Length: 129
Image (tube, rainbow, N blue to C red):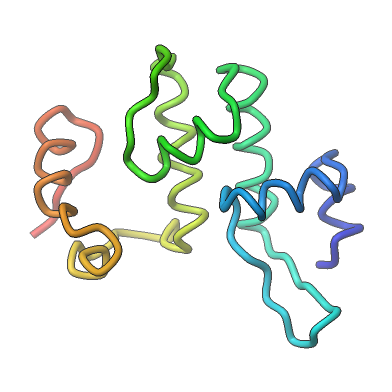
């Protein structure tokens, strides 16, 4: 889908979508040509999730990005935001269709194994063997 349809489906103006892209909150679209961008369903879902985190949890874009990157937040984050952040990370990484191998994350996140064990211990994720 093109930007116009993404705008219609999400109710989010194209400049806001571009802002989300600049902040790294939604994945880059496919670009078959220099001036053409193709968005998919994962862009619709990610855009809606960022919007919900902003409005429902009152998180700023830098806070959302920091939480996506695994950094803490200086302000209290509502527990309801964690599920939405998990979905957003899944949409961003393109891995929202199933389990993510920890080895695939090690290049970008050197502490992925340790973090996964911690998240598994508190029940946020499940580690599959």
